[in-house]
Length: 238
Image 1 (cartoon, rainbow, N blue to C red):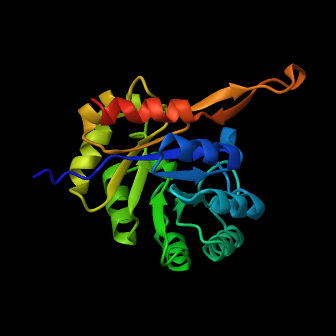
Image 2 (cartoon, rainbow, N blue to C red):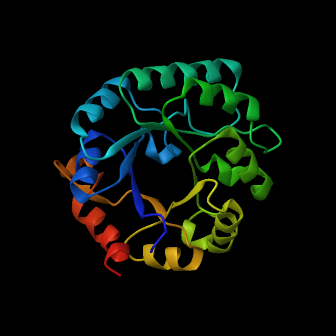
């Protein structure tokens, strides 16, 4: 009997259009974000509401991040994040992604506990703020203690394929207490290798391709259902 967890595939979606393509491609869930070049910030409530209407088979998660830059947040920013979580809950969002650090580079337990309380009833992912934590093994234990369902990480490298050693160590340390999700630089060419080297079974990727309506304004990058399918197939058919 195979007791391994199934593979899960989360698409970093930069808008409703990308959410729709992710669903058509067979994604498990999307993480809806604005301002992707800044690492992702909370999208508008209108975008979240529309994504909720369009997603029927793929779960909708939303990043809760009030700005780009570091992950050290003021009291006012924490209040905004809690308000955004409440609005997401009211819209029927399935889960959120959070990540808060102290100035010293540790997990900000106090702020994260406030966010977890606001998110009660929704799934919670701790996002790649983890990759800026100064002690990854301790940070993992702190995140587990908070009750997060999963941790998104590149193994503290700029791209997940460069962080394989730490990803493997973290996955072994977790011992099933939290799900590790590899993200950043994951694509159809390396997803199988990442799984084989780390044992991780959840993956976060964008699968975007350029779309152009007017050459004067350049290309727009949107998730491609074909690329989503191809990336998933590298694992599920191998």
